[in-house]
Image 1: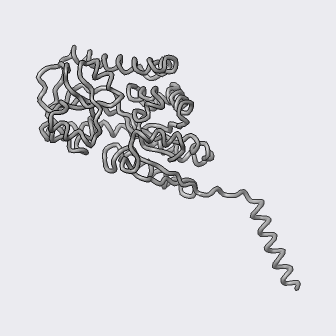
Image 2 (image 1 turned 30 degrees about the vertical axis):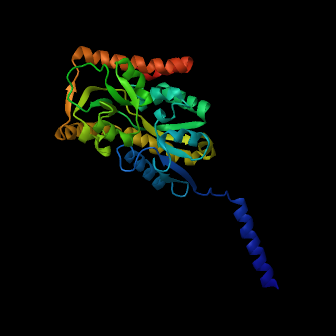
Image 3 (image 1 turned 180 degrees about the vertical axis):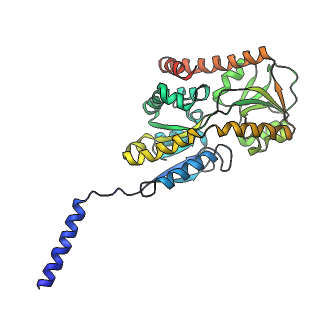
Length: 323
């Protein structure tokens, strides 16, 4: 009887100690989608980010990647984040410009993420995302990569008048201002459109042409490059707010590490340029005066689009996002 009572009291003491000790939070698993096809240039940085988080966050947080465009169309990712259908995504503000039109400023900026974090540009853009779409912008995965115009035939002049160019919303206004006819075509249909002559070329980053086999239908890359490719990590605001400070710190440390290593993209772009040349894609350099006008038109057309839909926030962003 005495032994039984002692055992009971010992068990009770253990239980009380357990109740008094602070409970350790269970590891949180977050559902993620990538807007970019597995193995492509803009999917790989996210793979590295996920690895960093899952290694550093053991016992705290874990990212479970559900898939890429085959699992969710890229232009639906923004709504999925807003509705808390997924917790985070590797995507670009261009794909959710219908929700946050100011987000395209991330593509037009000529400042680095370090500069935007220092001058308040990051905070403002995040505030706009949270206010407009209940999306939290964690940071950038790709920068220092320019867009280019690629043509299916050798360039004969510096005029773009009448050219049918595959476009996306971010440079649609720019292409129109150049006198070209922008056409929205899904990436999977571009090869056939080039082959059939439905389009004369396309806008695309300085890297990634080979990911989709487009080099077979491409003869010219036009320089200079314009804008700056933006891909990043975006959270459902509801999912972000559920994380505690320690869990958030894992993500913040990982994204800062990715931003600190962004100079590698310049090396990738140099290697891609060489590879394109070896594949028979010639570089056509616009004459100096035409190049200056080309870049000026890009900025004017892009910012006019932002200011039209968001005069107040657009003006504030332009001040912080341009030198």
